Amino acid sequence: MEPGARPPRRLNLEVSIVALGVLGTVLLGVSLAWNINQIRDRTIDGALIQARVAYEKDIVFRRWNNQHGGVYVDAAVTPPNPYLSDIPERDIRTPSGRKLTLVNPAYMTRQVYELEATATGLYGHITSLEPLRPQNAPDPWERIALEAFDRGVEEVHAVQPLNGKEYMRLMRPLITEEGCLTCHHERGYVLGKPWGGISVSVPMKELRAIEWESIRTVILAHLLLWAIGIAGVIVGGRSLVASERGLRRAEGEARAAADRLQESNRLKDLFIDIVRHDLLNPASVVRYYTSYLQEGETDPAKKECYLKIEGVNDRLMDLIRNASKYSRLEEMDHVDCQELDLGTLLLDALAVHEHRLKEAGIAVNYLPRGGYPITANPMVEDVFANLIANAIKYAGDGKKLEIDILDEGACWVVQVRDFGKGIPDKDKPMIFTRFTRLKKEGVEGSGLGLAIVKRLVDLHKGRIWVEDNPAGGSVFCVRLPKNGPTSPCAD
Ligand code: ADP
Image (cartoon, rainbow, N blue to C red; front, side, top):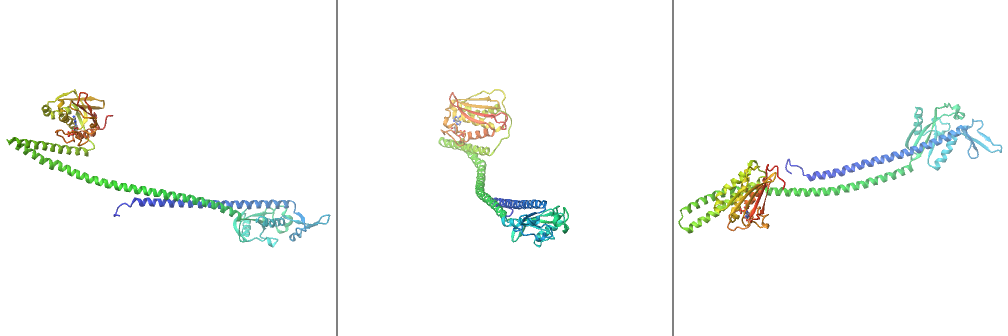
């Protein structure tokens, strides 16, 4: 690549496609992380709800027991609680002699927790910083929570390992109620103040299993989406790259064609220059010397030869002039216009051919009367001069020429009517194309005349066509907008 040149566009496109793939992957990754986080949060919320429900249920059981001042149960099933030994009626007998022992809320809760641990895996613990029973001593996490309760914290929870497994641990304080004082009055319990706490630990295993199911579904969905997205990017990207490649190929071809066109235009310009200057000048010299030799010649055979050279040379010069005029007109994309009179242009064109018309014995019937203002380029006179010249050349035997101008609102329509042989329908569309000469029949011409006429009419946004003259011959019609090429008239 040359210094300062633009980097190839295809590279930009490929980089954009890769960037799109990376962006999509990153977005999906972010979405996956967010979804997994949500699922994990929901697992924690679920575990916390379970722990709170378990705690509330324990508290209700305890309160019930408390409200009844403890309950008596079969001492054969539940051994008397040594920590209640100072309660006067800890052990009683029924009239039939069955031994009953008092179970206070703490003793009942402990037994219920033992049952619960084997049945559900849910683990409960009643504890305080100064436990009566050594087994009720707090573990390190519970100790931190108990200390927090003393500072007024109402709940502590966290996902914690316990006995090597993961648990949602929740702990709330145990507030001294009226019934508590029956057993614990001498331990300094204060009504309404926390004396310990209940910790509830919900096993996370099942919840984690459910959580993993959800996470797996989300991962699979994201993977599927990612695969579809990447496949779309690859397929779409490939077709984009392919069409871009095609576009660049077409661009290259167009550029090469433009270069070729430029080169052929350059050659054409060179050729036109040669035609205009280098051919016309020698042809004029040939004409001059031929007529000079012809004038002084007495031998009729030689004079005939000079005449032929002169005729051929005139045709050559005519061809050179017309070719140069046509190529100049082809290069133009517009013409500068001015206020003119169409009638005057037609009369001027007739004046150019006055001598030839007389020579051919053609009577001209000029019908227009008055003014025919038009915005046009003065070159438009060539249109009519050409049509009159053709009428002399190809329809001179009709001996009559009629010219008229029709008013069509926004346009003038000039009619040049001859009374010659006419033009067959099949040839009519062709005569306006360059070098279309129908029959030569010894008539001079380059085949460019009507092509020049059509080009001039086109530059004025007008129209030219030929119709049959009902009286024999042709009618050449030229429609031109009155106000110039910027306001062409409707066809
Ligand atoms: P050229 O320069 O050879 O005269 P033109 O382009 O002027 O060529 O005309 C093209 C052909 O149209 C002529 O060769 C001739 O056959 C035909 N043509 C033009 N005008 C007339 C006319 N008034 N009557 C019959 N044929 C015509």
